[in-house]
Picture 1: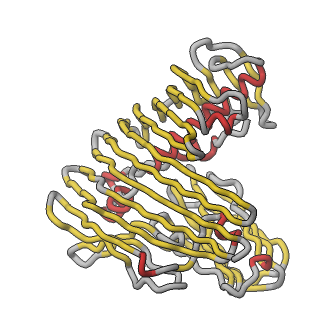
Picture 2: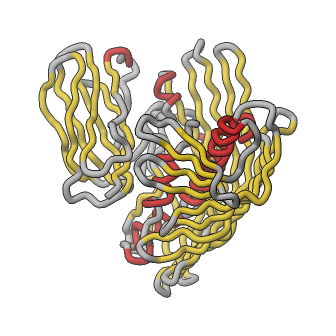
Picture 3: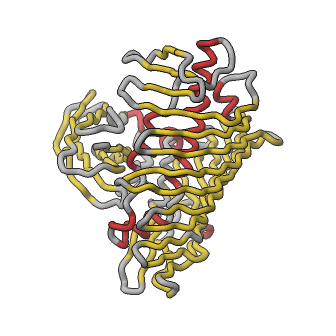
Length: 420
């Protein structure tokens, strides 16, 4: 079994921000994509549930949705038939995830990955003190396109508060691959509500992305559109995005960058669009806009909401991740190899490794999820070959961070997750 347990637990344990107690800027930023963590968690729950059933069934020789799977330190799983009313995963680090299946059917003649693309599932996911979530998932292929419809209900607990979920998540994706050419198109829509004793959110978000890759031509293009009409009440103050819509078209000539979803240049600036407003307690409070001009073959602007008082609040990086730089078009990516930090997520420290052909000055800076500078890990000359440095989290709080590594003229960004 290869469950996405790290992603799953990350989404469950720390991705929900305590909106009501944060600054207004944080509230506006998180409200713009308030369903992301919930929908990603349901996706990971589906993946983990299928992987668990496939592992248990492989051991027993028949379809098995009850019992206990226990993982040893080597990652191997053993099975016992108790309990008889749920399927329990016990990971070697002590994490316990339970699934109760009410319905599970679909394409069972292939692999677990095949089943994830064609199934009807109704199950409950339970992690003590963190989650009690029910997912109904109908996923099916039609005319070579994969469609899905999900309902997500239940509770997630964070900061000693239970958040009640009632989200409908639907979408589709289509892929075409032919030799050196590939196309990927993805759509999703999330609606519903999330509530705690301190805040309530009405979710209404849409997302569309189309990517075209032609390695022969060195053209890797990504078009994206986000719509948002979500609103939230935080401690008696109501914010609402009204007819918010943003469209952007990005490009990279590097296949490695495209594979990491790092498209670093504006393409066809005439198509870029931003519209919509922000209301506060029913009154216009700001407008959505770009924080700079849209010029072809430049890094492009960020998406912001410009408040009436002149304050700009960051909402989305669009082309690049927060604080990212742009790879030089004339620079061979073979000169540098940047590895993902390990472990990731990490608790107190993590190691960042990179390989470069020749001696160069290396700078590694850390930014938070809003693109704000946090600290500099390294800024000195380093020899060619494999290098590494350990990053100590010290006084940082749990959350998502980005580290920007610059070596000579080469710049790239990686995401890391801190869990305390």
